[in-house]
Length: 272
Image (tube, rainbow, N blue to C red):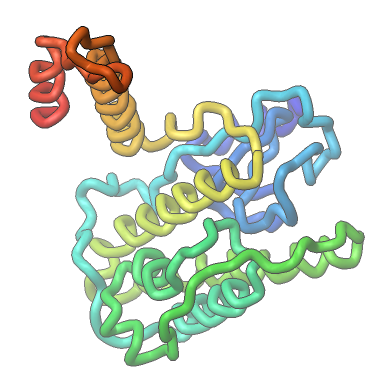
C-alpha cells in the first residue's frame, strides 16, 4: 500500500494511471491506494480490491478522483466548442468498441442511458455528426445478465477494457495532431473524464457500492447537489407548516390549516 501511494505522489495526483490497464486517467481509488478506471472494474459492489485483494467491506468505499489535465495547459483555456469535421481512425474504433459494450450491458453507467447522448458527450460532438458515421438509432442501456466471477471471465474483461483505454488514449493523441488540437484536446479530455465519473457515481449508487464523498472531485456538481439539498429542505419546511387541525365547524374530521409563515417559505423556494 505504501509503495502504491508513494508512486502516486511521485507522479503527482493529477497524473493517475489505472493499476489494471496501465493507462492514465483513472477514475477511482481504492482504500488501499490502487487507482482504477471505472470500466476496468469487473463487477460492483467490490468486496475486495481487484489488484491486491485487500478487504473493502469495512471501508468508506471508493474515492472518485479529480479530473486530470491532458497536458500542462489549464482546461479552462481550452476550446470547448462541439467538434466537427472528419473522424479519426482511432475515434471510430473507440466509438465502435463502446457501442459493443453498450449492447452487452457491461459499461459502468446507469440503466436507461441513451447511446447517442453518451457518445455525443464522450466525443464532444452533436448527434448529426454521430449519425453520419455510426448507426445509432434509439438505443437505451440495460445491464446484461449477472456475470460469473471466474478467472477466465475477469481476464477477458481486463483485455477488452485495456483495448478501450488504449483507443481512448490514441484518439486523444490523434486529436492533438489536428490544426485545432492544441485548443480542443484539453477540453475533450476533461469532458470524457467528467462523463465517465458522473455516470459511474450514479451506477455505483444503484449497485450499492460505497463511495467516499462522491462529488468532492467535481466542485460544480457538488455546489449543484448542495443547492438541491437546500431546496428540498425549504420544501420540507413549507410542508411542515401546513398541518391538519380540527375545525369546530367540521363534521367530517380535520381540515387543513395553513400557517401564516407558509407563503414566506414558498417565496424562498421559488426564488432559490
